[in-house]
Image (cartoon, rainbow over all chains, first blue to last red; front, side, top):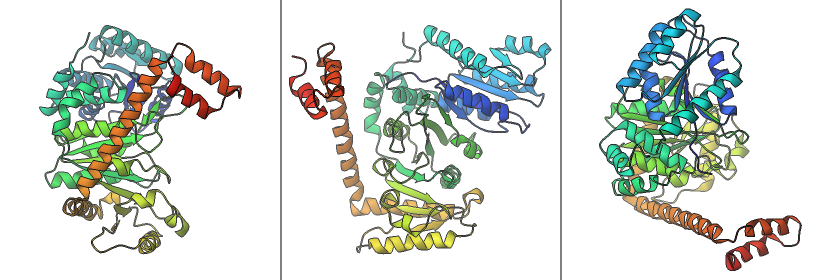
Length: 140
Length: 318
């Protein structure tokens, strides 16, 4: 049946080598019926935004455990703007201290999910954000 | 409210706008009705690219090989479009598309465009929309289009109809001699890559394939699929593999097979489209509940499925 599939890029920017969390999220989104483009470890913001553009994704989920989130997230968001992709939903997870969350949200990261978040919460967040977005601005 | 018109997207694709290209591919995948209008504009600009299929069992190294082949083509100043297909879950309808993991070296090169596709229920090793996605990349001007199938077993042979040149990737230890004489995937190879050739057993894999090809026999002037040993992770043998692939295309062109293959492909495509259109038109013409009524009769064994189908086609809607 023709339908508008939800496509999501799950990426691990930066240098830390732990992608278990990212894989768990990828799997949960897959099980929720979404197409997940998984790009693996050590992606630069440039690589992430290029992949998001070519794959025409609705959302990008970034997992950062290295502490570099205050440079990596803003850089991804800036590059998305430069490419005219500001309508792509950005969310993130990993080790992100509470005091950084307001600033990341101000920059345009729509959701931040720390360790222990149920995957159901993340799936519901993604589905709801994309549903609202498409209602206001359909892809076709 | 539409953000893009088909004309805008098609013009964008022809002008080299990656964003328009990516969005039109989504339209094609989602079977958005407007995609047809865009494809119609692009169709006259297709038919220029060399379409190369890469298939083989899971874990033989297809993605890594695609990555290295793309690098060889780029060194030869050719642009490359890549379509990488991974399976859709039959249970959730979701998919994890992980082929980009092995293609990270290609990032940042404007001469390369990579698109991951899920099969979305299609069983032949490609997605139903793959051939249309390839047309879009062809119209966008990519010189070579590499189409990586899902990890294929023995029967996923759609790629041979879509690609001009099909590479079947084997790796040592994936099967004994008897596998090599079975029907199916080995028969569609135009070029064999025996990948992971630094591992034990590579030579016996080559020998088994040679034996199979000997049994097939090759008429004079006919193409005998060459076998190339590669170690994709190091790039070994990949330039030679690309050489053989190019030679195959040249052979197709000079022998007139290219035109014949294209005519066959167009015929298959047209017949499939006609079937699809007729089915849609017929189903739309039925009275409400008519199909359900026949489903009930067949399920309860009051009617057999052949009679039900005949009645729906010849007596439906009255």
